[in-house]
Image 1: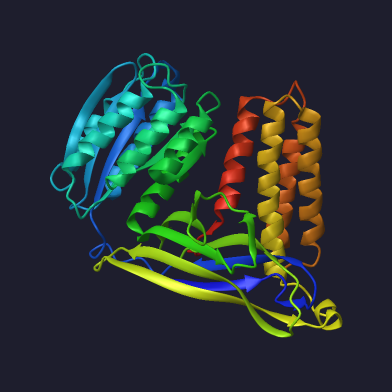
Image 2: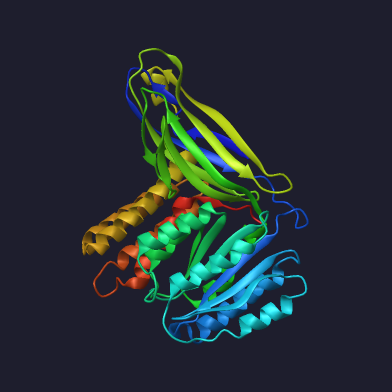
Length: 421
């Protein structure tokens, strides 16, 4: 995995304090061919509560069939349907020789009663306990409603997803429509090491399932983490991205999860560099990248990158331009952070404050787009946040708008950029 670090300002004025933005960019290697990749073990856990009746469930069946049709003979799948009861439609079964039977089981899923989300998810995870140890194990949980039967509090389900992840089973979630509990679904995906998807309409579901399948078959690294270790006199100020972070000796560890073939990830963080009297190179921090490669060889890797700035005269520092790509990434990620603040303000009933926050984010994006090579992306982001700002009124801000804010904020702050096909 290639790793590079860039500063927004690499030349700093001597005898002055500085808050410096740093951008770590990771580029994953190509994914293995199908014949070389690890086999998959996937549990499809499908909500069949009454609110799924009609187009939602019809499209979900088609998407589940899409996955089964594209899995390799050595892959395995289980199928769980849940409402207020849990039904194991297919135990963990090899695709080879059983594809038609699995597709028939999917076709028999019909809408029924309430939503025992925890029971369905637990049954799906249970089916993967029999999966081969060398397979990639994932539960794909779909729901369109509030968990109202079984365990339904977010902390408990998050802890369960963490424990399951520690056993080698990851969890991705797909929230459907406007009624599901987005905070619970995203918390489970974060704790479970998978992705959190939002299908606003049935038309969004096929692309989500295609992405989930692509993630599984192009996985090249797991447990990717980055430790940011400032020098004793340098202070770590924070990370702009949406990643779990924990304090470790000498710094903080940012947990990025999985990496996919030829994917680019960016982590943007800020350091406070105190006044230094001497000219020349000054080491300010160290980045430690760790990951487990996946493919023909499973191996642990560790890469250490020293971070150094150059102390120069105030005139020389003032004459240099900032790194435009770092500045643009800071503005994009800051807009997503503003989206989170706006959602929290709206939750507290301060819609006017939320509106001002989003308008300022849109204004900054539009200003940064002037003359930028990424103008189209910046302007699209500006338009999205400006549109969300216009919804910040009692008669227009609703459950659907909240989900739009949450999932765009998360997607932006994950800062994934996949190679164009």
